[in-house]
View (tube, one colour):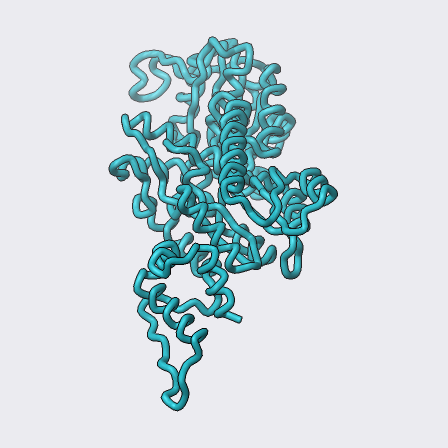
Length: 466
């Protein structure tokens, strides 16, 4: 698929309406979508709910300056590509902007070719960085560049080296089994079996037999001896998902198996040695379950010594960008499809949704969208309705870049009062507006009809507003 910089819009922060529109149109002509705002405050408001590929900002702005905007974004951890422009360029300003993390610094009067080249350079650096970071931010297939995930990967790698039981905590859909598999792969047991079992899916009356096996004749229907999950995982790892659902009486036997490294099959008369590493997981608050006498405190303390918490997706910052593109590639390959484009509206919805179902919900949404996509384009309508609805709520507060007072297509311009002749300037203004209306607001075409340069048109429109 195409790179992200061709999918997200570029944000132009410029209080001079004519220059802002000139920049937007030049960038549109270069193949980029754009959003334009007149102040740093508007930029921050827009960035709070809209993803953009990069930002171009003037230094001199009403209220907060472009340098202050740059500083605030960098202090918040934003890695957004930023180009700073100013008519008052000095070496000191350039050095300050670059020290604060600006990607480039350009001066007015603007060289539009230089702007396009600078934008291309910044986006290309971002693309290469994203590609490199994605390679560096994988832990056995789990993608995560955020500090929380990097810390998790570090701790999981260290704990994998021991044989101690591990407890993985996290909301539903965060990827607890993926992390358990990664720990197994990092451990010295990686060549032995990894056996996953969901404790919530096994009937309580069969659970003991499932875990520890049974001898022939142990109960009605036990026509032959059967080895349990502990024996199936011999030498490897047994993953107990949703351990909070395990009956209390079986918890006692699990604790004994952990301490003694032996199990007794149902109906058996002797303990049998097992060599199994236990990795457990739950989305429940086990301390509350202990208070309600649904979980044994001694088992909890045995497991909790080495616990890992997977942060929910809403706490993982820019990880969602990496996940979106990685999952699109994954499911496109699985379905033998080539996704060449993703609509900006669709991408914006994916990046800004809150994901109560975490990574699982994100993956399901992308799998659906890839399945429904046609002609290599992942469209907004392909996403689940709940994502589209949340996005529409955001869009209701988005800032739409327009020239203040601009006459929109279809709007009638009032005729001058019949009691006086209009001035030449007024006639010119109305004529420009009429041509602009006739071209559907296309300023390039309007300038061609009028026989003037686009810069002249922008300046005339700006003068008309004063």
